[in-house]
Length: 114
Image (cartoon, rainbow, N blue to C red):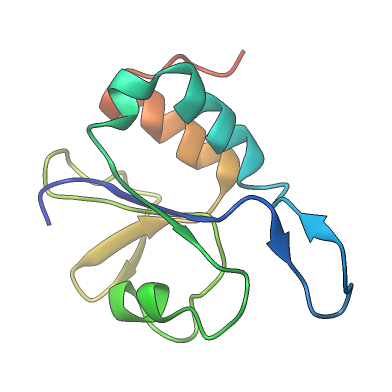
């Protein structure tokens, strides 16, 4: 996979345990803000906004059933993978929001979090 792939929960999702309410993911929201601040840089990523409900087939296809939590940055071949990235076979990925923000700055030139 040549490009980094970012999987996020779609903002405004419904949770069946809270009928009639809409939610945002507190871990995805800082990433969404960074993407919105630099849309020209976001264009270099493959970004998917996924529904809240599980199973999350797109995540399962990219990683596996045990790693459906979001957000996740799946690292492409365009840059070396950092030593702290998780691995499933040849696939390297990061799930920590703060680390995702750091990697977006390092790998794609997004502004850093101060």
